[in-house]
Length: 345
Image 1 (tube, rainbow, N blue to C red):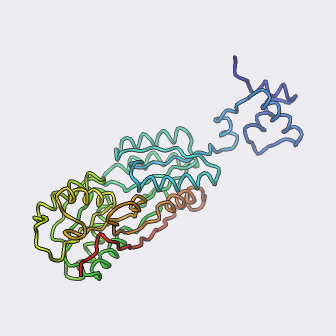
Image 2: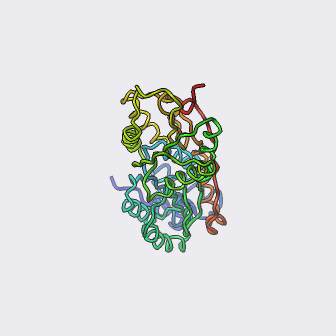
Image 3: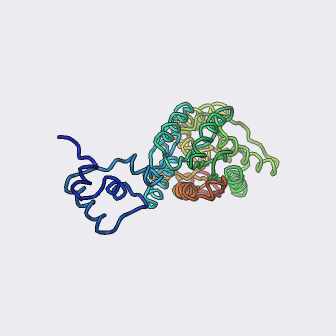
């Protein structure tokens, strides 16, 4: 059976094809109520499905928002996705999602695809990497923005879009201060990739605050921004510090992992080695991901309102003035000390 055409609807309603198109494709030039009702009734009776591209042309908007994340399975990003989808839905927009697994070629391909689908806005979620990668994106986004597209980055600001930026440096410094005031004096760090600015900012904020108290980490190890990255780094750290269940019970070292996911991997590694948290080693993370609610021991961390970050990114994307002026919003973190960093009296 042949698909119902727009001209079939127009004939059934007794109007011109142009009039039927204006009614069904959302043009601002809408005919009288009676005419519009006849066209919609004819379309419903015939089972006509409007053409999305024609609707986008008529409205000068596709109603689509492209969202690029590093890893949708990571609770950090899935929480941001939740906020983006909720706010987009409230605004009558649909979200197209791409997960890149931190492959920047995939990121560029995803951006190109969203641009080809004429997305109204594109949101990039995740820390940027150093080098020429953002310059390549900048060239692609230049034409996109000239054609009315909006760009928002969740993370470090770029020259070609608005930004919602967590205060990674200052918040990790606040965490270091809170742990120091809690009585910790021996610190170690599980960091992320050195070319990822989020990892560097969180590490530097923590270390800078320790230095004001005359302290520095006794050891730093690094791994991927993942559970397995934290797991492998924690095993190396335990070996370097010669931690064991038989170690003399004194004040345990406090390890700062730059993400909660890495901290969870670290705790799993230490548990396999017979080490208990916080009896043999203390640990704190960053992000306050939702899965921490069910984790034992409860994890000290810096809480970011991840869902709200996603919502704010959509608001920026849909705000003509903010997106056009590359507005920059900061998101503070809140230090939460839990059982994983508790010291025995």
